[in-house]
Length: 363
Image 1 (cartoon, helix red, strand yellow):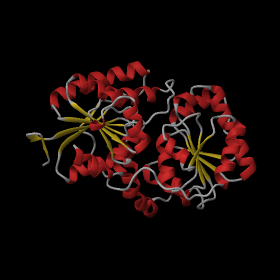
Image 2: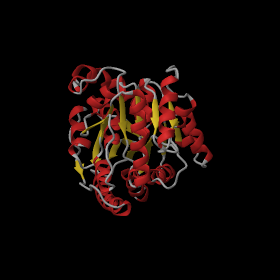
Image 3: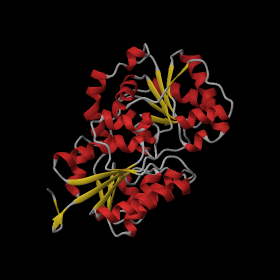
Image 4: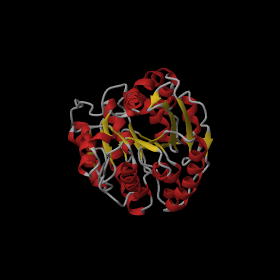
């Protein structure tokens, strides 16, 4: 058992969404391997089985000790339910440290609950900024960082951002991104066990992969329509299928806006981690509005087109593994064409494997 000051450390690991489950899995495994006293608290912010339960099973993780069952709601309503539930459990369990990851509402609620109870906070993926405060995630990131005692920055760029905001250097640790550990631990298994390429009759580098689900895109008809029209142009020019594991929110809003999926876009239901990694690793190009998928694609060496006007992963733009396209149809086509012509010889800026070990060592 590791020692924290003069007592044995107890860690609370908070998560609530698919990305948190996936990227905290190596940290959970590290705690298990070192026999550290910890527990997992799941807010259940993602409540679809295919966006939640399947990932615990595929990652070989036990079900969380606590599940708040919060599900969907307004920003305030969802966060409020989490605050009440998290506080109750932290008072009961009395952990030494609360570990949070990324930028969902779970992170904000976890940080606020812990800081007001004078419990130390470790924020994994600290220092990411899009500088777009219309995004709920941006507010969550900023507030969580300024509540935290241990800021685990994935890159030197993220560290410099935190220093620029007045956070003491002594609190900041450049560890790399846990995504590196996730890919290292699961890619071989995906290649061996996933049958998604065969099931969809796909060949390596003969299809594009698409995801989009962020509120700033799917809540506005003009942006959704722009993306769909852009996809039509992409298919018309390149004649490669665009595989689209559709997020429930996106599906709902496309129906609400009475829009049609264009020719060439193959919609499939949400899929598990291994199937998604297999699709991502073998795609000719990825189109997404997900920050995590920008990061993964960079590490995997797959060109990425981001369907947003900004990104909290500027490193991917600097090394040219990624390009911002926004949601204008012609801009999307130009971005895809440019990335397909670019050389796939960038250096991964997100660190080497062993990120989770470094985080636990620091704690």
